[in-house]
Amino acid sequence: MSFSPTGDRFAAFRHSSYTRFFFARFLLSFSQQIVSVAVGWQMYDQTGSAIYLGLIGLVQFLPSLLLILVTGSVADRYNRRAIAALCSLVSALCTLALLVMTLMGSFTPLPVFAVLLIFGIERAFMSPAVQSLAPNLVPEEALSNAIAWNSSSWQLAAITGPVLGGLLYGVSAPTAYTVAVIFSVLGAALLYMIPKPVQKTTGETKSWAMILGGFSFIRAEKVVLGAISLDLFAVLLGGATALMPIFARDILTLGPWGLGLLRAAPGLGAIVMAIFLVAYPLKHRAGIYMFIGVALFGVGTIIFGISTNTEVSIAALALMGAADMVSVYVRESLIALWTPDQLRGRVNAVNMVFVGASNELGEFRAGTMAAIFGAVPAVVIGGVGTLVVAAIWASSFPKLRRIDTLDAPST
Image (cartoon, rainbow, N blue to C red):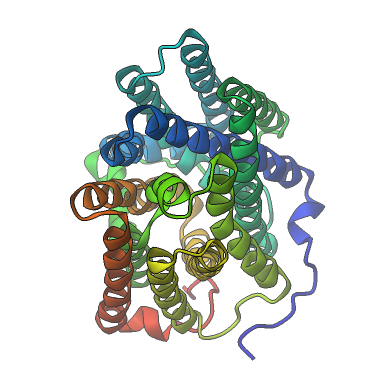
């Protein structure tokens, strides 16, 4: 059997620090999802431009790329919990700025993009700190369980966040932003309540070798490199999130609440898969299952692109979410279990740039192609591209394809 039941499905929650971390991350992810739905719908409603929808993702991604040599080193040298909590407060202030602009009638592309740029800077520091913090809160034997629950937390927010975001935006845009501010503040409070964890800080002196430590590790670990780059190009081509306002309004003729359903569908599929992986962790043939997941993600993207039926579109998006969850689970397990603690910040900074490139640049790719070819061809072409990437990577990274378990490599 490749999937075997685990002994303690709640092993990570036996540790109070992790419990606080779990709910903090849930609230912060929830807030992020609400803001994403509200900004996307409000921007498209006011401009009617697919290019602007794509720029929303690009503006938030660029800081992670430009600051990659700084953010990971900060997470390795300083208190990761404090960094995450401070970034949460910055997120609350950015959301508050969007609320004020909406109330004052000044929600226009230039000032909104300025706020989103600050959002991007905050998340550039937040992501490696949060990703590196979880392994400090549980013992190694509970880490795989914590990784699966981390994914469940994010995906649960991905399900309920867009739905609630659509409902709240249907009431009013200020209502959506107000709730997002509250969740960000509560998340920051929970992070501050976590006792300072033991963290192996790097004793290296500042140098280019130290700063580039994350790149060096990933380059040396071909399995990690293959997993990260596979996810990058698969989601870069197959992502359709930025175009959902177009599909919701123009193709499926749904309103803001329908957009919330579309945004929630991948999360629904992902959390079902995440819960399955909590109960039945992936024990064998991890590499094969990862490639199968990427291929199914491409198939789901194609189905979504050609569908004009709401139920079929939601089912296709759910398939995409479940398939992507397998890839996320394998990738995050490899990074968390194979990376020394003193390198986790820098490695996760690189990983987050790859993830950001796949998501944010994927949105820009989708928006640009939709402006040129139309929304449906943009999505279908991306899905076909994902299938091609899966085939190329399976051939180019045989070690990743043959990987069996997700245990840390023997030394």
